Length: 169
Length: 383
Image (cartoon, rainbow over all chains, first blue to last red; front, side, top):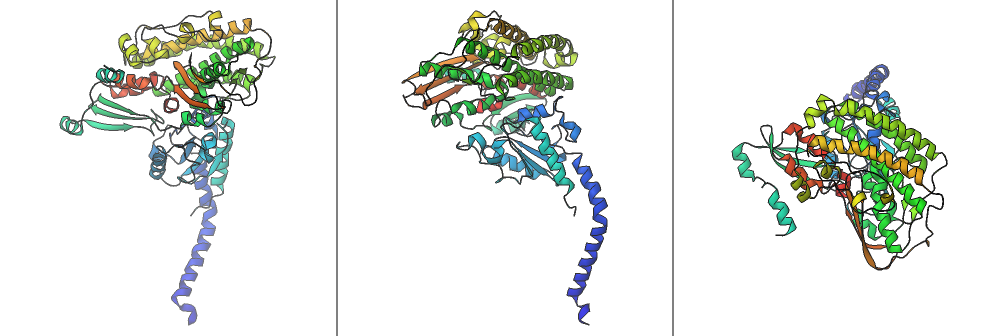
């Protein structure tokens, strides 16, 4: 009669759930991740000068749209990608966090440029944050000052790889 | 009357909280996350559709450039000083190099002066094309974004050929330029600039004769000649208001006095004039580059300097004409390897009083046209 205690029952339910998730997750998770990969909507948030190369990336020569990343014109509530375009100052930092909090889940962050990663050229400035890791969690770091559009596109593709292998719960 | 009092007397008085509640006035915060602003915030009070009060709130990209200059030596200052306007990175370094050359008592070789003119004009066009593209987005004209962005890449290729970097060249140094132009530069520049001039003719048909563009800019945000002078705007905004004022003519630097060009200006003072002046200037820039390529002599491109040069005690003020207007540096040296104080006087910051003046009384839908028409570059204004 030991086997029918509530603890054991819970263990059995847990194992059953695991089995169901294991059978269902590959097809459904794949489908959902596939949908997420090809419809990344970036927020239109410019924090500093890297926005110029972001603009060039959505221009005709580098056309980032062919990789499933739509130009940054969407509303904040429909976005799932945040590209931090360069230096984040002490005045901008609370706004960046506020915008991140208002975005619906799942959301991803790309830190673009040396300033967003470590502070870059402005590491010893009194008004610049040494990297944005302290404000928002970052998925992909794109180095450069400013990164070339090709580098940004590679960063986006890395993010898509990451989403592809994310487990769906 | 002091300058600040005179400036304040020209601007309309702002409303208090009680007043706006009584009159049913709505306060909107436009930016910093907004498709029509970007690292800049406008606090706008609207009565129906009419803007009754506008308060610009800059400072989202203030990175302390001027303070940083004080603990780097003259050469180390070059990379971070061009970051405020990476679309126009040569023009923002130009007055710094002129000022430091005077402090260090050196003169750039003649070939370097011509190369500087060429690179400065190329960068000016790169900025103006980017500006035009974003203006198209603001006015809901997507072709106007795509065309200048595509042609801009050709000019970026030219600048990359000379300096090795796409936008942040760090090409100008005190005493000349960093390296000589490659051999193929001249042929390629002539070919691409001729193509670009043909493209400019098409711009006129597609953008400036477009009813959408004309409807949204003609007669919008009229800045009179007196206001333009008194509020201290510079560059295309000033020249759009019937003031033919260009530092390249008024106070020629390097070899601008040897080259032929006209100062283009418009008489209307509205958003259309402000958008048309950069277009006319691009023709002049193309001509200037072709002339400079013809007249350019051979020789060295960089004056010899000791590794860590010391400046003489004194102060220098130098200004140039950048893509957005008059850009000036005021450098004080105390005889050490580092500047004692560097002050940037940037054209974007001077557009703020005019922005407030123009926005009050305008319609809310005209806000993007007026805001971006003033050639306001937030990163540069905040420094």
